[in-house]
Amino acid sequence: MSEIIRLSAAALAQKLQSREVSAVDATQAHLDRIAAVDGSINAFLHVNTEEALLVAAEVDKARADGDTLHPLAGVPIAVKDLIVTKGQPTTAGSKILEGWHSPYDATVIRRLREARMPILGKTNLDEFAMGSSTEHSAYGPTRNPWDLDRIPGGSGGGSAAAVAAFEAPLALGTDTGGSIRQPGAVTGTVGVKPTYGGVSRYGAIAMASSLDQIGPVSRTVLDAALLHEVIGGHDPHDSTSLTDPVGALVEAARRGEVKGLRVGVIKELSGEGYQTGVLNRFAESLELLRGAGAEIVEVSCPNFKYALGAYYLIMPSEASSNLAKYDGVRFGLRVVPEGAPTIERVMGATRAAGFGDEVKRRIILGTYALSAGYYDAYYGSAQKVRTLIQRDFNAAFTQADVLISPTAPTTAFRLGEKLDDPLAMYLNDVATIPANMAGIPGLSLPNGLADEDNLPVGIQLLAPARQDARLYRVGAVLESLLEDKWGGPLLAQAPEIAGVK
Ligand code: GLN
Image (cartoon, rainbow, N blue to C red; front, side):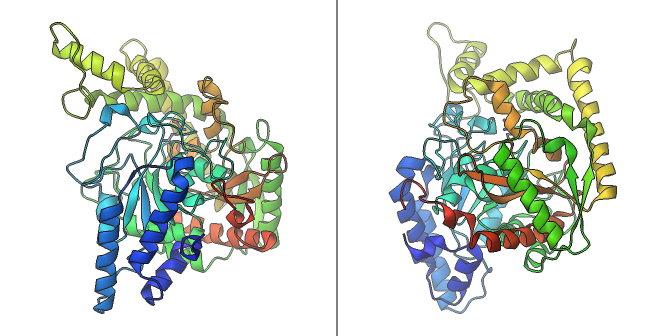
């Protein structure tokens, strides 16, 4: 395997700046890796070869001319195919958008272009980001690089698998209920859901607008901070975008320190229903933090038991409304039935053919929850639960500076194992959903391998809204303590990745 693709984004950026490695070589190395392994992983729905190499060549020329460039200029990146890109297709993992090209770039894409980061391509996902395994993609599942018979998590399984398989040093994901963090956990990568409003959602195809957030996917905490600083910050195109500056995230990741920090273990998120290996690694990491001077306290969030139920009312309600625009007229697919096709019949036939089962299930659920007779009983109650969850967090953050839990209850399950059982699939997000419900930031980092199956386990850190820097600070400390314990990064412990040594 080329040495270049093993580098972290931070290390690669250094070599690009010193011109030890050219941006064209770095980009080509990743394209070669995609060509070599993506046939078995299926992380990419589209590979952007020409444009990526063109951007890389421009970076090399600018550097040779002595121009001052963004520190990440020339570092390639993969993008979840829920984020719109001019000049490349965007499918949202759905047949209904097959062949559609966005007329504009998402704000995060514009920022990647300004930093001159070559975009390697668009990554696979569950259709419209609905799922926890990437099996609901209309373009076939993505496979977990650690074990090709297992799921890479979801909905952002493509981004996580691409980064874990060394096809890209960085990727963008979106997280509505855990779609950045849970794939991170099961692929041994880092994933961050920023504070709601911290990264512009302009150009992220909406699933549930009050929960969606774009965020970084990487192999190290520092790399996530570097990318977060590129994509974060105010955007007038997104009315929910925060006006605060992004903050010194990279600085926080570089100068980690946890002495005197109060780390709150969420009682409700670490017992029943969690795999033994997940709990064992979690307990060990608490000891590591204690050893580094952190104070471990227990906090209780009694209303978290309602979070999953409330999420599966709010998310489908918002999604049913957001997805109403795929009508066979404005975007992508149009199916014209035989006979006299009225607009209603075209719409019906297009949606019947274009949407998969999970999307239809949620549209039906959401439409029902919002219907006149049931609105108060379902949607209204779920919004009240949301307030209770926010209050639980507020109370917990008076006792602790950051909160901690496993990211997902289990390691990667087998392809097909939960496909016919929506409820079992939904349970993967018990630990990640509360952060979306409250709008607070969350970071998942690799936490070793489970005893039972030698597969990656994740650990999640949560901080109050706007305190994303705190996550990078604590995350970087825990990451370095864990790497000392394992003698290097977790991905280096894998016997093989993407089916090769
Ligand atoms: N797995 C969750 C769901 O299916 C979360 C999805 C997401 O974060 N986009 O809704």
